[in-house]
Image (cartoon, rainbow over all chains, first blue to last red; front, side, top):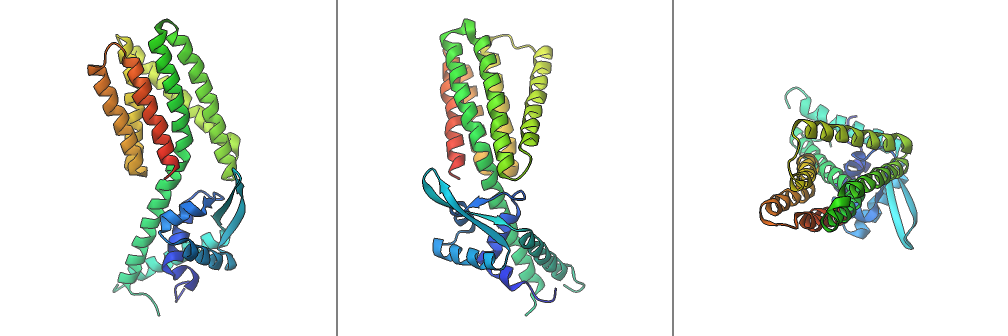
Length: 99
Length: 186
């Protein structure tokens, strides 16, 4: 990888991916919890999640829990792989001779 | 434009920070139902021990069985939600309880408590310490809940007589219950 993945490289999306990556596989996180972890506004977070969803990096599920609408987000296999490659890319830069 | 080593290091730090926050939040969420469940069990068990000490053993036995089964169900559901085999998670939780019971049996065989208050204090001290240790790895809220349980138990043991069990019901069970609700909101 010569260039960082532009989808993940954006700071808010990077935090979203990192927050999802640490969860067990197939575990979903609620939008409101993700908002607290990432520290983004609702609109901003929603826009970035849509971006990640369109790239196939996350899966979004909307349903009702206790009669209230609920949005949950999960890292896809493709997203997990892309994030791991992104982290490996960062480590390569740090570990490169002369760095 | 490629990143510089400093930018890459900063980005890795941001990733680590987000991962830590997410890991803590997930741990809080996962632990909350167990704390609420056992908080209720402690409140009932210690209250019953204070009101009817003669039935304390039977009451605790029944409550422990209910607690183990309910913990297994919570673990089973959480495992299924996460796409794992729910039964496997439930079994691990059951196995964990069996190991702990064996540990308690061994400890009480070697160092048998002399008074009912000592038995009553042992479990809050043990589980409070477990929460503090968990918190060192998983997040500050566990440390605060565990430390509160340990401190209140120690205080009650030396200063609250003759209703130490009632004290444990209120502050031990109450701390678990409130702690669980607090973690759920994290």
